[in-house]
Length: 453
Image (cartoon, rainbow, N blue to C red):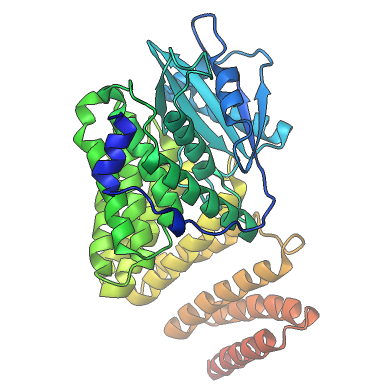
């Protein structure tokens, strides 16, 4: 029995039923894959072999890129990680590709990594990290005719899982293709000579593929299958040489519980706790000094979890933790490098600090909220995004009004009116009647309190 077939039998418990496959969706979307010539220390054509294997796969448009350039950064060392990300982003932009496939030889194995343009950004719709590594035997990588179909489909599934496009049709196509790939993987018996040392990496990517397919199903059976895949990978951690790979598996377990907390109706608090526990475990391996982007993105996700937990349990410490985690993310996703994501974080910080300041009646925390909103307006300007800018002005006005009313502070109330009128001007010009009417009431209340002083 092959390794992949053994995994399918053990984890899925049965082969998929052909009748359970979704019907062809009629969409004609091809995701653009750029395969870079692999960094190999021997004469070979492993990158070209993988490109040939992926060419012709449904839903993929594959290009092989063999222009020479130094690939020293592919060692996944923390000191060269920024070079890897920057070079990949430049290639994705230059070629208009959706997914970039890197390859790097380690001893007798080829390590594959997957990069997309929206990785580590607020619009990231994929569960795949750049650090996620799929190892394949180097001896197989130079001859596509001898390459096992099961392993080929695993790489295919990894590419489709990495697709990070936000359009509705792209999401439908992605799910449709993933379902077909899962069906193939549970039936295939071709990778007969794959040794046990590949188990944790295969299990990790099987988990990613199934999670990418089933994350929004709200199905407890799917949750248990994916959980079993990742936990089996962790159970073989003695085969993992680089701790960042173990960190990635805990990261995906966190993602699994995180999505379950959003889509599963039963035991939601246990899913919150599971997500927080596994995300924090992942951060022990993906720390902020060596692998800051993954650490920072996990912190961003943790902030949402703590906020939602606070809403469920009214635990003020959870709201404080939400602010702390967002502050951690803010340190990494800076204005200079990630202006749009930084602005998004500032907006969320403004909201959380505003809530915390109101509950604790802290003027200093409320002032931090105002600062965060004003930071957001460094990117969301009146000229570029007038409506969102106006909504931020209104939020700042609300904080000034609350502070001014509590302290009977004339200056703060007048400041609130300035912010309100800025927003009202935009609402009226855009003929947003309901928004203007609501804001007019706020202006009247502020003026009324100001006249009493």
